[in-house]
Image 1: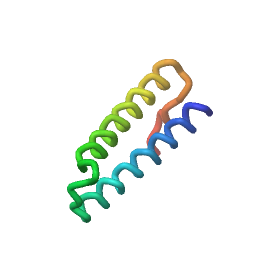
Image 2: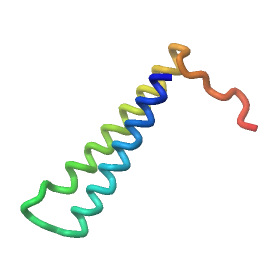
Image 3: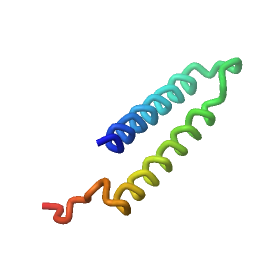
Image 4: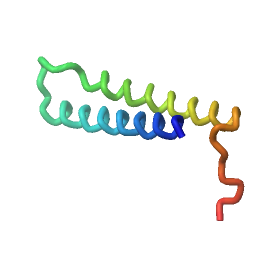
Length: 69
């Protein structure tokens, strides 16, 4: 259950960074941090989520749905 909570938290963090980059892109303020910083965080978070899912499936903590229907 803890792994699922961590994954949901990481998804929320990823969406936050996506919208933060959107706001910075629209304002175009040179004093703010660059948009690529937030996009990079989003990419690294998605890599962490995929690795956490794979690790959870391999260890048996997360059981995938065997039949898609």
